[in-house]
Image (tube, rainbow, N blue to C red; front, side):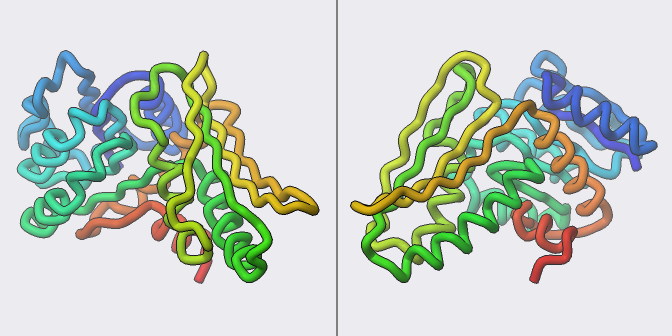
Amino acid sequence: MRIALLGYGKMGKMVEAIAVREGCTVGPRLDIGDNPGGRGITRDSMKGVDVAVEFSQPEAVMANIEAAARAGVAIVVGTTGWTAGRERVERIVADSGIGLVYGANFSVGMNLFFEIVAHASRLVGAIPRYDPFMREEHHREKKDAPSGTALDLLELMRPHLGDPDLAIASIRAGSIPGTHVVGFDSEADTLLLEHRARSRQGFAEGAFLAARWIAGKKGMYDFRRVFREIVGLP
């Protein structure tokens, strides 16, 4: 399999290392200066590429998806903060016939956390004495707040909550890779669920799993669905 990298920062380089470890070919590697407005993504530059993995900036995502669609290349979108344009992306994917995997968080551990939080919310939702709350922490350079992951967690919890407008506390400081805390509080006690990323390695591993899965497929898929299929969850 040949993988192109759209964004060649820390995440792109981690995906590259995993792809090489797994026997894949990597290239081209298009960073900000190589791909203004998605113009570095062409049929010629993507010749022989099976999947492009995108870890850039929210403002660059749409142009990258459009260019990948014109080039006929499947794409894994790891960047967050662009979901306001989801309907437009769905049309692009349908019209072009490419495959696309997106997700608020590609971490394998976080996707296990999604399953745990969803199950916990169903249980706690049956006992209205508990008030839910959420906190997320990321490095100071992360632009979107709350994080896309926190919003996805909220959507998983929402059907079971008495308060559908749960506030999310966001912290941006230092070099925190990512922490998400979901809690349920009552007069008697507090229940806490926490996922704490130690590094970005888990995100890169998940993105590579998604790239391997989407190669040769058509359509738009949430990574949570892809992950459930990969690990055999119903």
